[in-house]
Each structure stands twice: as C-alpha cells, then as structure tokens.
Amino acid sequence: MALRTVIVDGSPVHVLESGTGPAVLMLHGSGPGTTGSGAWATTAQALGTSWHLVAPDQAGFGRTPIPAGSRGGLRLWTEQAAGLMDALGVEHYAVVGHSMGGAVALALAAARPQQVTRVVAVSTMGAPGAPLSAELDAIWAAPPARSGHETC
Image (cartoon, rainbow, N blue to C red):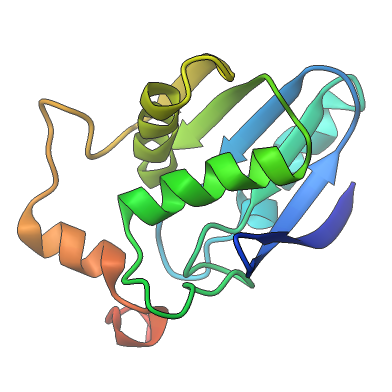
C-alpha cells in the first residue's frame, strides 16, 4: 500500500493506493478525522494485491483541501473523484462508498456511466428519494474548521 498525492484539476488529493488488477475507487463517509486510508486500509489489506484499490481523502477531509474558490459538497466530490481516476489513467472502475461516499458513488455512476462498472453504496445518504436537508448540505459544504466538529 502506498500513500501519495495526486494533482487533480490543480489541487492536491491525498490517496491510499494498493494492488493491481480491476480498479475499485473506495469513498469514505463524513465525520471528524475521516480519511480514505483510515476508512479503507484494513479492507485494502484484506483484499490483498489482486485489486487496484484507490482510496482518496475527499476534499475537506484528511490531507485533501477544499480547492480555493469552491464551497465543497457533492458536486466537488463527484468531479474530484472522476478527475482522480482520469489522472491515474484508470478507464473503468467499480466504486464503493460508505454514507456520504455512497452518495458520491451514485452521483459518479450517473455522471460517468461508461467508466463506472459497478457501485456498492453502504448506508448511503443524499440519494434521490432521500435528499439532503439544507442544513446537512451546509454542514457538508463547510470548511472543516467551521463545521462544528473540530472539538469532537
């Protein structure tokens, strides 16, 4: 497993990457201290090297900042996930997402149906039929220092 930074649309994205073979993009949920490696390292280790696993810190989490001029949120996370896989040269991939990451996984599959081969969405929030409230959307989009979670 390797931790590295990939530049996506001019912004750094911190990524845990491991293995070779069919690609799987793994998207974490939200919460204080959440990162791609924290959420998925044990899973990556259990799956071994037969899968090319990509687990980014999504914008505003871990070591991936929200790009200047952006307010964050579902659109940014979706575009950044697509851009990351493009930057890595991965043409086809499955997506696994937990909670917030599941919402991003579904949005990514809708935006990139030719690239996304499968979706696993676990405890997903924000899916059609279960829209986000304005308050929750505002929390998602708030910079980490203003989210109210910094004391948790």
